[in-house]
Figure 1 (spheres, rainbow, N blue to C red):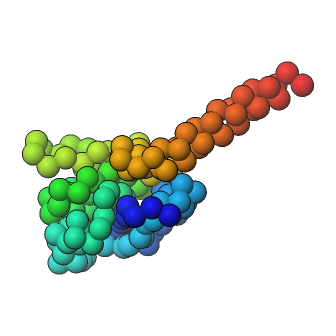
Figure 2: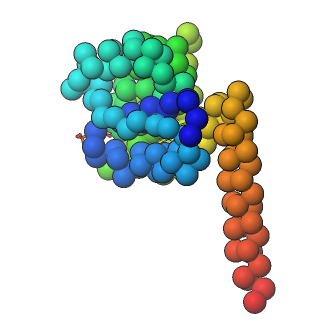
Figure 3: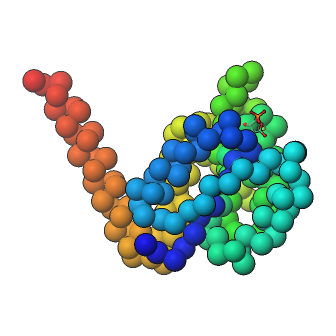
Length: 164
Ligand code: RP5
């Protein structure tokens, strides 16, 4: 275990089926993380408090997933300089285009690193967080190398099966 902590924050428990993919990757890489539900529009005071205390609570990166008018990542970023990675959660009405555009289009001055919509985005958010931690943590860097090698091996094996 390492001493760097990642927050996995989501706007609703309905986001968990997607956001658990981020948590799963962090678990696989042995990166300590805490999963939290904070609704930007239903829990604005908790949102501000979480952002303002994120660094003192020991968080190095925040992964924030939300759907629809997805204020959560931007408003967390407004309250902290801990890097925020936003995950647009797919919606029934607009398929997550609404989530994507409301997360990615941050005006200059308050950055949110934004991923792809949905499952791939949640997975990549965790990998990107790990890459940030790996800048100063050789253990995480080694685990990322192992993860990539396993992925490559799996892709090679899947291709090889076509020749059988
Ligand atoms: C957002 O509204 C959440 O991130 C979720 O994606 C969406 C719907 O939330 P629920 O109505 O399912 O709680 O705040």
